[in-house]
Amino acid sequence: MTEREEFPLISGHPSIDLVNTEVVRRGVRHDLLVTESDLNHWLVSMKEIGSLAAIQTTGYSPETLHAVRKLRSFLRDGFEKLADRNALVDKWKEHLEDLIQKAPLSYKILSEGLVPIPVGDSTDAILSLVAFDALKLLASEELLTIRRCANPDCVLLFMDSSGRRKWCSMKICGNRAKVARHEEKRAKRL
Image (cartoon, rainbow, N blue to C red; front, side, top):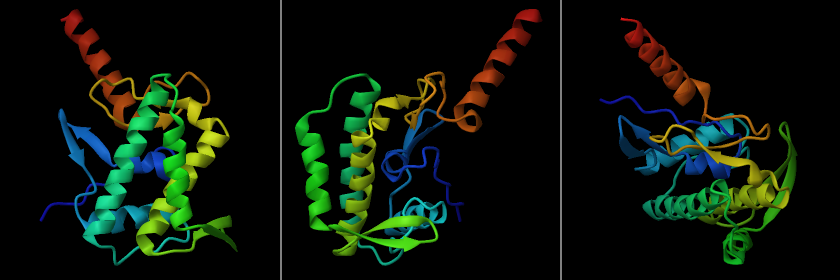
């Protein structure tokens, strides 16, 4: 039995962390959301870090998985445009607003603070919360700090409020780059 791969939860934002459920390992792109079980695992992981505090974490259908993967692709297109310093079209924002309308948000005070709670079926609830997160980032202009990892083989996106960050994370790509530079210097000395 293979061990379940953990998700690279590096942004603290459900919309970006959803996009980052596609990774590259040894030059091959991998989808970490292949089954409903993978989706449940991602939702549990997001709930544990407080990103989707009030979401249901079990019982999703293949249709839900398909809808979430479709949203992931849509978000990746928009986020990569912003990372490449291109503007988003109004339709991008409008599509996310439409997803929220299918499961409007109510709010509750939980240990995490004031938490949005979608009112609607479970599939629309997930889509609504992720769309809400993306729109909140867009409205606050935080989304303008989205960047691609400097590793050309990496597809992960991250937020860079300092303007100096290069890697999705030091643990994932930054350390690999440091090791590669060290090996290169060592080879030159020999």
